[in-house]
Structure formats: C-alpha cells, structure tokens
Length: 298
Image (cartoon, rainbow, N blue to C red; front, side, top):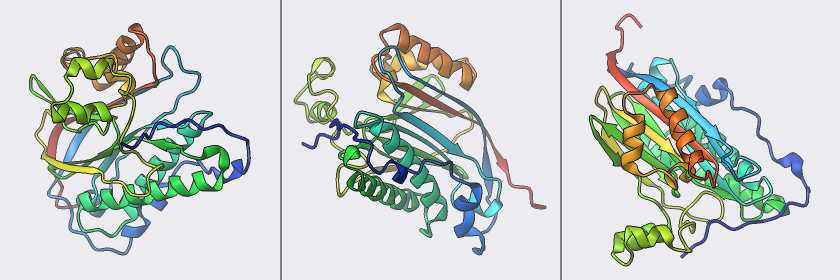
C-alpha cells in the first residue's frame, strides 16, 4: 500500500518557487478563444454554498476549495462549470501549498486543454497537476513528499462529471436520498470493499488515515471518473474528511435538507466542530435549481 500522508519539515529554501497567486479568467479560457463551439443546449442553474474551517485542533488550514462558473457559450458547452475541493498533507504548510497548487493547475488545465470530452479533460488536468506538485516538491527540499486529495465536479449541460483521488468525498442528494458517488482511496476503505474489515473496524483502525492515492507523492495516479445525468433539484456535496470523520452520511442528509447551501455548510461545519473538530473542515454544496435552455439570440 502507498502512504500518501507523510510529514515533512521545511527549511525555508527556495520559498519563492511557490507561486500561489490566483488564476485569471483570461488564463482559464485562452485555449478556447479560437475554437468554434456550438452553444450549450441547456445550462445548469445553480446555488452555491462554501465554508472552510480550521477545526478545533489544527494550527493551520490545509484544505482548499475553488470554483469557476464561465458565461461564454462555447466554454459552457465544452467544459461547463467546475467545483474543486482538496485536502493537503505534508506538515509545516506543505499541505496547504500542495492543495493550492493542485487546484490552480486543475482549473487552468481543464479549461485550457484540448481534449474532446470533459471527462478526458479532467483526467488530463489531474495528471498535469500531479506532475506540477511533484516538481515543486523536488525543487524545494522542505516540501518533499507533500501531497493532496483532489475532488472535482464539472457540470456540463445536463451531465455531472466527477473526478477524484484521495478520501475527500462527493455526495449526491436527490430527493430524500443521499449517495456517496466517490469511493475513498484509503487503505481501510479498500479493506471494507474487499470484505476484510467491517465499517466499525475501519473507523477504529490505526490505518484509517492512510491514503492509497493522492496528488503529489506518486509518479502515476489513476483517478476515478464517473458521470451522472443531472436532474433539477439535485444537490452535490463536496467535502474533506474533517467533516465525514465526525458526521455520518444520514446526518449529512438530515442537516443539509431544507437549508440553503450556505446555511447547510455552516451547520455541518458547526456539527463537526462540536464533536471535536480534529481536522480542517471544508464543505461545498452546489444546488441544481434548474436546467435552462440557452437563448437562441445568444
């Protein structure tokens, strides 16, 4: 098994190599400026909530979340909107750097790439992000071994495309049901799926924090990719394990139901903190309130 959760110290060398400036819209769409794309058939109408919290124990927040919702017809048809959550690891701020670098690179590469399908564009972007984080880690001794989980949701017309590595999760709430769409890339989760551990044994296992895939430490990754047909009323919940380590799936559904995305995020973070807040907590909720036809005059 591969342990992606190693800790590494920092000696302050070559800190100027860590470029964490915000991505620009111009950078995101430059690859599409000269590409002719048909307008989208429909566009998801969304409401978004996002909250990230230090938790009750940690001294710095190594979680990171970002999103991009374009308004260009061609970009909406080909790439849609993208929502990303990451949970960095490495200690001494290395995890924070890994998470931010990975999210920036995935956002830029996803929109700048030339792959025909959103799924392939996400896979390509994850590969580039992995090599980028690895290259920074190699260049800066104090960042050696840093890594991050990465969970990305693309909403393209009437499709939701999910790509992820690690144990940050993506849930789909539809009606009165909640379903974990992502599968944890962790040792205990793999043992549960193989029938070697029960859920209760996994929760108490000393290896519960061992991740088998993540961005950064491994030369090759194999992200999971899946697609779900979007329905009006769908609610997507992306989160780090600082939430799911304290709050069960049925509680996620109960707390989130009937609340606005922002209020649901706030209540879920408060619940995790009330139960110890052992890790950073990040939750992003994306509601699909409708699928609007693209105006022909646009």
